[in-house]
Length: 446
Image (cartoon, rainbow, N blue to C red; front, top):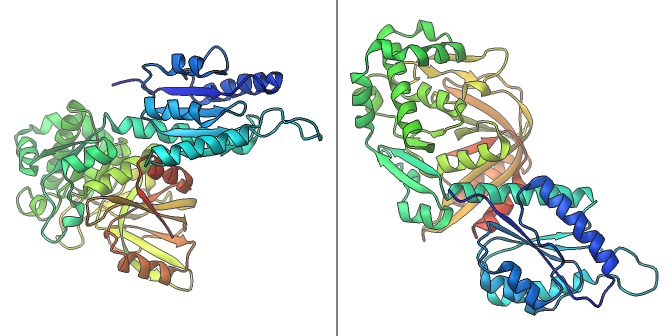
């Protein structure tokens, strides 16, 4: 895979205060390289069109940081926009001195020239940053833009595996390979679930020794699972993990019911929980865009995410309960119970995950939604995961939301959102907003 590449393009003209510009130039390089050590930077400020053209010639970056070290007319930005196809961060420097004398940089007027050129030349969004390199807000925003650009870049080499098909009436989870590639850059792979279950059935009991140690270490009460189901679960996890590792897969959307109950005889729920702990975003009910939502959230927070249905609200607490019937990352279990296991609430076959999820002061509810015309949108809202026990058989969490919960619920239903949402263990609404803009995806904040 091509290495992630940040390109710093400091434009200006030599008729302003070059000592101030040079200081900003050097400080900007230092800051950029603190977040992207291999960033490509020029040896000098690009104070002419010829210098600019020579520097950007044949470049193929994944993020362009276009900075007005001084004023530059729109011809400079035009050269960048017509030669490079990459996300743009337009960075305006704060005027260093206001003393009634001359403008030292006039960076802001240059930003208007660049913004005007972009508006007339491009249809995508760009990021905008105002301030000096020593400002905390600038440092925070710059780090987020670079981190999100890395995630966008990583998706170009990401394999997402569809295991089986969505059940009847669950078409919201289906994905088309070309739509996935066009919008997100993701490679959509597929395999029939019976191919994996047949491999699992052919596995010898002794071949599960290594995965057995991991499962018993993480799952509380697994020893109480019926012997045949326990062995079949371990075989299935071993096969899933081996196939994922062999094919460089970063996320899966797995069929679950009814096949794994009726044909294989053991649910896949526990397998998906362990995979999420392995940093493989694993969604059930073959929900491809749910799996991609989980992957993105996991990349941003560095913590496994939770995929669940909204199943209940409490108007007094202003909370929404998210639930699913037996899958969640073991590491997200409440500390007082651990990742307890049991049987499926409907089929009465195990092992499935059976616990309430641990609390978090900061959380984000997120979903990549597919619109009827084939375009996409992001569902985003802030929340707090409360310290609540298991609400229903399966796994659950109670999230206090910022909007009025009854209003939010009405909007979610009336606006046609899919039944699955991903809850992330941090507030990353700003980062997800940046990513949506980089992908030219509609943002729906609630």
